Length: 153
Image 1 (cartoon, one colour):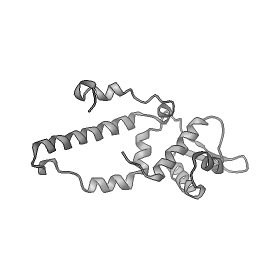
Image 2 (image 1 turned 120 degrees about the horizontal axis):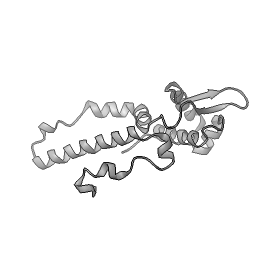
Image 3 (image 1 turned 90 degrees about the vertical axis):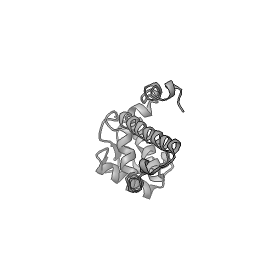
């Protein structure tokens, strides 16, 4: 799966805010430096995150940005879908019609790719920022048991 630079920067920033959850606001300058993100670009990203209700801001000298929701309640799926919406919309405009594929092997392979995409979406929707930050998203066995006896591809 490829993600845009914007999504990468957003995820980096969100994980920094997860790490600092409950410790007060972080200035945009600090967020930009810690995550190696150009500050002007990050300002636009943080405004989008604020509009989604994930981040809030506190004005003033000791102000900055912080998560406005518990990191257990924000999923990777909602973050990725928000920041990758344009790319995902383009992909869905040209879906592969499995019935138009004449070779049975190719049809089966494409069906498998669709299943992988569905499994990825499910994993992203079930993985909170907190779980991913702690390195404890859904265990791989839950998702691979249905594929080749749990052996993967």
